[in-house]
Image (cartoon, rainbow, N blue to C red; front, top):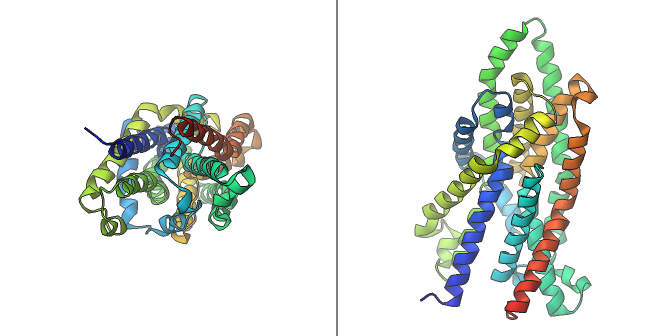
Length: 351
C-alpha cells in the first residue's frame, strides 16, 4: 500500500501532466496557428511539424531561460509539495476558463501566478499577515518576465510589420499567384523556426516540475537531479511531450481559430512574416535568458501583419479581450491557487 508521501508525489506528477495537457490548448497552438489558418498544412500535419522542431530546440537554444527561472521567483524554503499542487490547480483552472472563452493567454504566466499565490498564502499564515506573505517573492526574478509581458508582443508586432513592408516591396513586380505559391513553401520554414523558438522557451517547465517532485519524494538522487535525471530522463521527457501533444490535438483548434482568423485574416505571405517575426523574437530572448510568453509574441506579430493593410483589418475588439486576459492571468491564477492552498490547509494543516 502506498504511503502518504508516495501518493502525494503521484498526485503532483499527474497534475503536472494534466497542466501540460491543458498547456496544449494554449501554448502549443502558437506553433501551428498561422500555418493552419493559411491552409498550408492540415491541423494534424501541423502538430507533427511543430512537435519535431519543439524537440530539436533542445540542441540549438541552450538553457539560458531555464537558468534564469532557476535563480528563483519564489524563495525555495517557502515551497512545499502542497504549494506546487495549489499552483498547478490555479494554472489549470485559469487555462480551462480562457480555453472555453477562446482566449490565447499564457500558460507560463498562469503557472508563475499560481506559484506566487500559493506561496504567498502559505507564508501569510505562517508569518501572520498578507504583507509578510509577500516576502516570499524575489523581486529580481520577476523583473524580466513582467517587462516582457509588454515588450515581447511589441517586438513581434514591429518585426512583422517591417517584414511585411520589405517583402511586399521586393515582390511588387510579381503576380499574386506567384507570391502565394512561393510563400506556401517558405511558410513551412518559418513555422519550423517558430516551433524551435517555442520549444526553446516552453518545453522544460513541466519536465522540471515532474523531476522536482521525484527528487523531493526521494525517488531521484541529488546527483541525478543535478545532471540528467538518471533513468527517469526519457520517461519524464516522453510523458511531458505526449501530454502537450494530446492537448493540442484535442483542444488547440479553438484558439488556433481565434489567433489565425478572428484577429486578422491571414494569407501565406502574412503567415510567413508573422512566424518569422515571432521566431526571431523568441531566439533572441531565449539566448538572452529572458522568459517570455510565446502566446504574446505570435499574437503581436499577427496584429502587426494585419495592421499593414489598414488598422480596420485587425479586429481590435478581439485583440482587446486578449489583452485583458493577459493582464488578468497572473493575479487570477494566483487567487485560485491561494484559495486552493487554504482549502488544502483546512484538510491537512501540516501542508
